[in-house]
Image 1 (cartoon, rainbow, N blue to C red):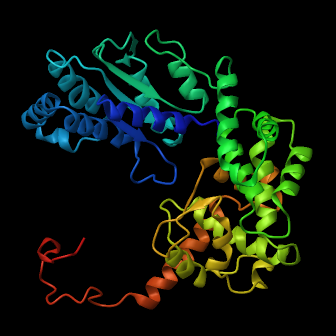
Image 2 (image 1 turned 180 degrees about the vertical axis):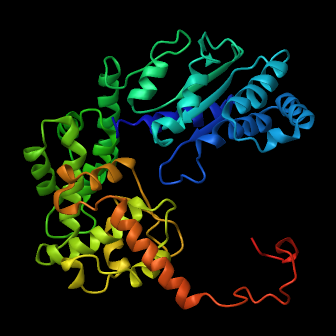
Image 3 (image 1 turned 90 degrees about the vertical axis):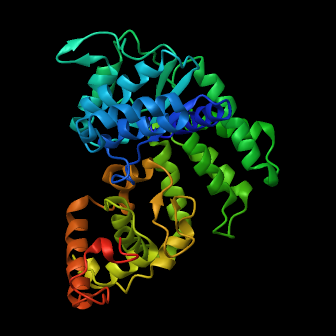
Length: 400
């Protein structure tokens, strides 16, 4: 389930392994970085990281590429696995016996199931239609994968004998996780003088969700509002927290959003919030404040409510959302949700209610219209002010 701390585990293990010299590679899928984290880049990135990790692996990989230069550019995942990873690793393993850890975080964020099908087959030890243990990887190499148990991932990896599963929702892990969450809450709320019993109560309600614990601490601190003190906020959460674990994150997202959007401006501000967040959660590549403002300035009014709204002030909408978004402190940094569960919440009408932002259909229309409008107004001949039209791109200094 989203919010249980899988990525925190992956990053903690990665840091520990790096400190002890055993981290070979750490590849983190991220739905907000699709271009940078394509499934086709998984094994090539791991191969490059392993080459940086050990000179013998570097020489083995260099030899493989030298003998077949086309390997540098292949997007064939099976060839990448066999010739860029297994081949060099098995050559180097004759000498390299030190443990090497490879981490793949958030495999569930690698796209649709068909985009990772071949990766799952290879990790499961399935090639050419057969199924066998993944004996091609030497015993000093270990791969740690974190993921939500999506059906295709679970089906591929639950039965192979070389795969060991750890479910963070099951005992004895649940008790340890609750203690970790309690310590986290205690540290975050230390300055507000909440006692151990109160921190323990919040940890109990978190039900193993680290992200819920982070959100509830942000809400109780209430940096964006002065009308309620932290004690009142604590009591309001404790008295109203939902019993169903699947509703916990939605409960906190609604609390935080209702808190930062003034009651007397709720209807108008919520509409503008939804328009801005629609772009943030649906765009393929994250946009900065400057880019968001430019697009919204040229966006069409799509419905009756939209027709009557005022111009959108991106700064006004985003500034109070520091608990939910990253990149809002300056104008050029791409803006991303701090946690993938925010996307899931905002695009699920049943959970988000008035904060529902809709799917990509309206977003695509708004983005296409704005892009065409901007190009019509700003494109011109020799937009880069080149001295000559006959120069090749490679001959122009600073042109990327």
